[in-house]
Length: 337
Image 1 (cartoon, rainbow, N blue to C red):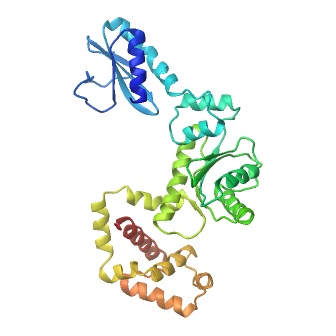
Image 2: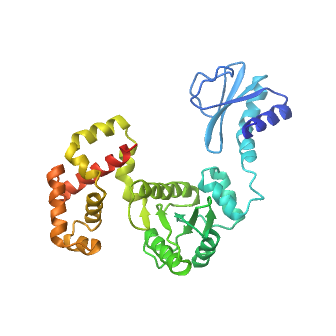
């Protein structure tokens, strides 16, 4: 039985009323549905309707029976249901924080966490680390390097952990990405493991940590999809990819067909050519730096850039064409089966 079903059954038994519920914006056939928009509590003369949240999902509760009495119940039940959803008193700090990051806690539950663990409501950011091995040792080391007693490391699954780091004015690191780079270097030097770190934005408080966590997780996912080099990736790197991914696949295919003919597709299917182009973009269109990073003769690099231009019509040594080529590569990888 679903957790909310159990709560509803308990409420019905305790109050001696019929209690049903359904998700907002749905129309179940076997439950009375309110046909009008409302806030708080309303009734149709037979049934009383009220809105509530359970694990951040909106529902409409339905009470049958005496309307006057039901309306009194309806004003109290949202808080009562929330208290059932948040029986977190026995959770450890890490377990509780994991629920917050996954979006399973309401604002009231986050406040309880802050009170219980004396966590100030201050700015923070989330890092998500992909750890290939030695997870427990990695968590211990990350905890050791935390410069703030409020910072907490959470094991999300067998290969991923998350760090919620609270920002203090005196922090020596200029950005979340800088701190992520420091953690990568430390884990690599001391444990010999090469982690990949996704970086979320800095948010105003713990109640928004879920947003930062989702951004960091998305950065890791996009880095894997696009086979990007490097060990630290921020969500900002992939804003263009996210915007394109949110569009309909048919529209993406239309854009791709407008930008790429058969010759262009051959370039995109050539890992060596694509790798050269991506390194060139990473080096801010700097030929000398790209040659050094790829251990490639300058003339060889220029030949490849010319070949890309002949095939795609895009001279990626020019910024506008470099942007178009980046869009083309994103479309290609998003549309790959």
